[in-house]
Image (cartoon, rainbow, N blue to C red; front, side, top):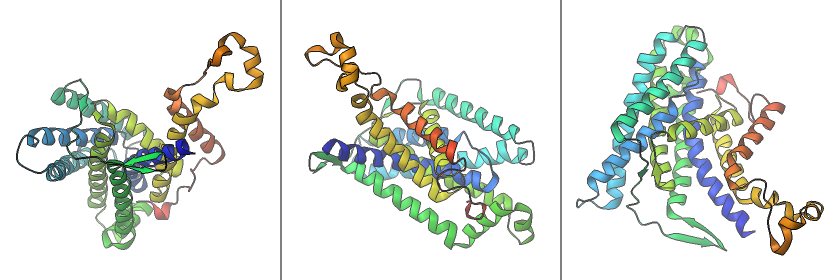
Amino acid sequence: MDIFLQQIINGLTTGSVYAVVALGYTMVYGVIQLINFAHGEVVMIGAMVAFTVIVALAGGSLPAPLILVTAVLAAIPVCMVIGYLLERVAYRPLRHAPRLAPLITAIGMSIILAHLALMVWGRNPKAFPQIIENPVFHIGEATISAVQIAIILLSFAMMASLTWFVYRTRFGIAMRATAEDVRIAALMGVNANQVIAATFVIGAALGAVAGVMYGSYYGIIHYTMGFTLGLKAFSAAVLGGIGNLAGAVLGGILLGLVEAMGSGYIGEISDLCRWSLTNAMLVEQCKDGGNYVLFGSNYQDVFAFLMLILVLVFRPSGLLGERVSERA
């Protein structure tokens, strides 16, 4: 039971990061039906910029919390500028092109951003500075750190704020109108170019915060981290229902939980020496309390993506489905 609770905590933390990144994917897709594969690299650049600021300020007299806030505030505008340039330079000219063209462009921009980060920060992994005290709290035999609590609470706060923005503000109404039909929205006085650019900018800002969360939690950042993180976050958005804000959150949390459960239990479940039938067949390997494990915890990603495939086989539109009227 304690292992189960610990994996729930770990899964919620990881899933919260996935959910914030997935919101960037689902917002862009909801408005212009484009899969922005460069979004993972925007998250990576946010983490790298924050790392640079923290390293530069760590030796000074500023208190650690203020340094971290400064790093986040530096990463956000950098990522927002990148998000705007992606939309303005790479995607807007292809808005009416065949759908394959912007998809290939998105992959190309992902590669370009990754190599720009390689040129600036180098190929070696960076240890993300842990400058703030990280006390650990006990829940039974399970533990949860202050960083995990902060990530979970901040993630849900950003999700709630974004939902309020999309459904309760005039600009959010313009975003949903553009998602419904760009031409009709333009006839109603909505500046579609402005709305679409703002969607990229907001998604990039969320990505910057997610990058700092990732670095703070895992302690290591690398110029290639955007690919894997982006792939998982995109999968989370698809799992919940691409284009659906609530679906992105649900998909991220579920993917994180499944990964954590896979990491905690897949090795134990696939230990053939645990089961009487296979134990009798593997006498030599299982004697004296031996183990014969088919899948270790390193198979957690396989486990998570198998679940994604199974869900999409039976529900291709995702768990909550894609509802055009609620895209944003």
